[in-house]
Length: 241
Image 1 (cartoon, rainbow, N blue to C red):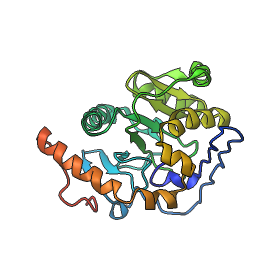
Image 2: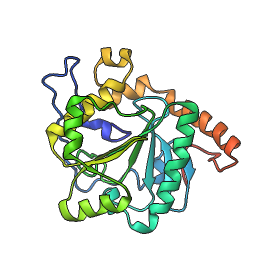
Image 3: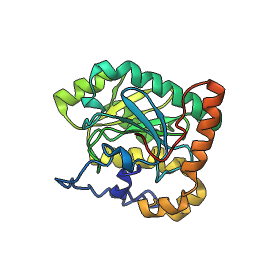
């Protein structure tokens, strides 16, 4: 699903039947790649508490990640003092995506399904989520999110979750594998191009090849956007220092 979560290898057959989501296991003792800033490529923007990067194994061109600089397990653990900064950054990337791509879907695993245990919010220009009949049922089981405190409250009281937000609503889902598969299929799989669907849900290695030019293309559009917005863009996109 992301630059690192892609190892999750979500496989969704074209028929939509027999879907399986192998759950990755954390590997204790491994360093956090999101804390090692020298390993981050295509850094686009920095705020005091956050980094914005182009996903290096993107689902589509314009796929971004918002990372807190400090190490938090998920956004349910990020303190309220950083909420205003996060919301401002989400508004900024939403304007960028609307101008060059499509409205954003914000997606977070919330530890459930992660392979890198550092909070990271996917920003994917897939437009408004298509809530078909099955997903409407799942949405009824989720809770609406009006502010980040709703996510923190869930995490404190119930632990894992996964989160989906589009321009119309934000929903927090219980960490149920079946629900997770349905959301992946109805929202993400159906948002892929016909060519991507013909190839099947791509492993990270495949996306690295297929989307090799997308991070650089995204960075060029981001620089243009920053010139128009008169805001900051990294001149050296290869790393954040």
